[in-house]
Image (cartoon, rainbow, N blue to C red; front, side, top):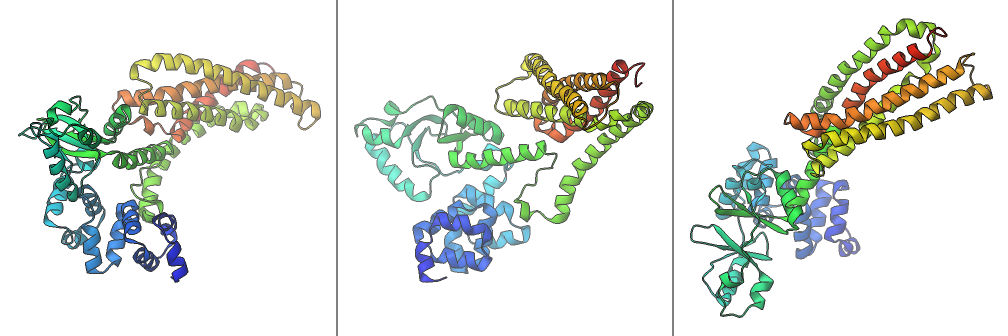
Length: 441
């Protein structure tokens, strides 16, 4: 790279360019950054990208940058590399960080213990503010998870309170820490699921959350920047499920071809089997279709409207359940609301369908025969019934899955659409049989 380009390089620009750069360009650009920008860039990379960069650096450089990592980030990096590489990467860590990282790897990746940083600022309750400040100055050299709060612990490491650095520096030097600390400390136990951790931080507007064991002893702290990654991961997982795709667990281009086929093929196979029922339903109404071929024209319109309305309802309810806006006990209220919404939307779509049939007949764009009004009424009433069915199915399925202890996001839009396709055909031909009796049928 030229000196002119090097002068324009910043951590932000490198992060933006990172996916498009080759391994050599990444290393060259990284080495041209100032120490501060290099640290910002390294901290901003994902664990797989950090591991790739470490592989390209010389041993002295790799040693420096591996030792920059706090224990929780080091554990994340060790988790994403191949088992045969782990010994080499572990050798780059200092003994203390390696020991702490291995302790974190004992927790599940999606638990509070797997997210926490075991390095946090701590003080005793019985010391003066001046003594606490001097002690905290020494602790700040240990790559602490947060520099905003100090946790007040007893001799058994149980949490007694929390005090912000601002409160410490603003208090008289001879005051004891337990006189200025806040005792209403929000915490989570080490095996709490990461979604619950994220909700706790959001509910209390925290920048850091202490993690304790079953006996109340403090084990570490989770900071809000760790939770940003968790929220993104959980949202990605839910989006994949809504799209009927097994969670990839890695960036798109990093997933192997066969693995991608497996993750997509399983759900596609399940949905295909479901759609076979649609073919069965079409076969059941074969005689009706043969007598009134015009009915087949509106089959895609009917089933797509039901699938779309069901997908809309499922998406809204899944998200509301995830945000705790709805509880299981609210299913009846939701059902009533969706019936009304489905009836209103279905009536509107049905009116559009009815007008379309009459308009095409009047303009001569298609000849529906002498019973065009009845055909239009069939389409209108079918759309009303199918949309109501779709909205109810889409809204209730997440509640059923949650009641069974499953993830509501599994009620993916394609799954709901497949379910409604079959019922939509039954509704359509049942309405047609009633409305067109003794005319076309």
